[in-house]
Amino acid sequence: MKNVNVVDRDELLMPEYRDRLHLFELRGDPDVTSSHIYMEAQIFTPDSKRFVFHQSAHAHGSDPKDPRHRYLLCDPGDKGPVIPLTDEAGATAPSLTPDGRTMYYFVNETVVGGGRLTLKRVNLDRSNRETLLVIDSPLPGVNAHPSRIYPLSSIRSDGRRLALAVYLGDGSTANAPWGLMVFNLEKPDVQVIVQGPTWCNLHPQYCRSTDPVALRDIMIQENHGNSCDVNGQYVKLVGGAGADIHLIRDDGTNLRDFPWCRDGREQCQGHQCWRGQGTRGITSTAGPDGLRLLESQAVPHTGHEGFKTPGGTWNDLSRLVVKPAYMHFATDRKGSVMISDTAPSDEGGRVVVMELGESGRDPFRHLQVIVHPHTSWEKSTHPHPFLSPDGTMGFFNSDESGIFRAYGVTGLDRIWSGERRSV
Image 1 (spheres, rainbow, N blue to C red):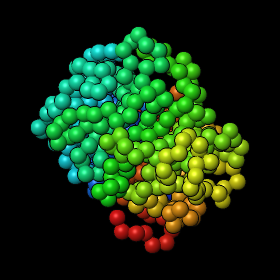
Image 2 (image 1 turned 180 degrees about the vertical axis):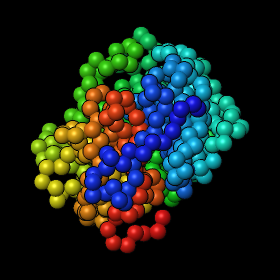
Image 3 (image 1 turned 90 degrees about the horizontal axis):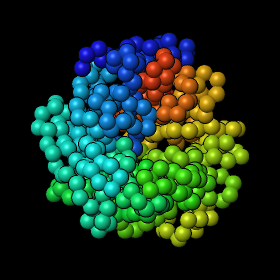
Image 4 (image 1 turned 120 degrees about the horizontal axis):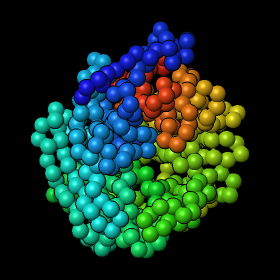
């Protein structure tokens, strides 16, 4: 890759942290954007030293026909190198294997009702690139081609399964189903485990637990009330008012509910994550009390009742904040520290970090503003921060320079209060 480098940008840090943190910008060619990949995908090596981002892309994906789009491997501790892992147009939805040696990804050449979707694998040293599966005919059990490929995949913590959301329309039927494909990476083959018109924005996320039962669970989002045309384009977008969050086993059984929202007062803001490698989820709710962060355990499926779900309990992580405004967020793998952006305001909002206490009981504490991202918050310019698995590095996106790019902050282990746990 020519002219790709890591550039110091410590001036963007809050002044009180410039002696302890280091901020850098990941740049490509002057006219090419770069972006992080949402934390729903596994994009870090387990030692937290290297991660994958992409160029000629934005915060919600890339153009499948763009020949300049690349997935890149970065080692920020050594100011690079930045190594291209893909060169195919249409490369999308990457996930690193739990051992950190290999990246799975797809090549999207689909059209609504046809085309081709290819599952590939490549080692992080660019060796042994393999084509594992080509889907160019209707999927078994649904009689439909996958298309409108979701730009994020999610890999199981044992590396044996991979989840990917798709559209299952034929190009002539309005409100056709969307679905969740689960790939058996050992055979390989694929199964559609859930489908229907309400699964149009699934955000699938495998539980990061290594427990043999919990690791099979996938968090998914359902959007009741949306309608789409024959090509899967939204005609009516209900948004948070229709959204609820579920848990499903990766064979399509044991649907459960997270007891969030749908009470006519508060809505799911549309972003959720796992609390580290545990079995509790965290969501952001939008309501009269602000954008709150709620932590909950999934409970047996009884319907789509949100806060009224029988047996549901909540831990409001943000309850000590008068008017919380948390948009996108993620924890480290132990679920003990967290990063978030805040709703648009002066200087593009804020990137904040906080510590988490006892799961299911304590609010977050030791909230610190580390960066004003200065992003415009135009479409696809969300900061969307996340942490490295060990919690020592934070990442966000911004177009503060006039071009949308990825940023990283190192040294977060220097600002956590008290004794830091081993990582």
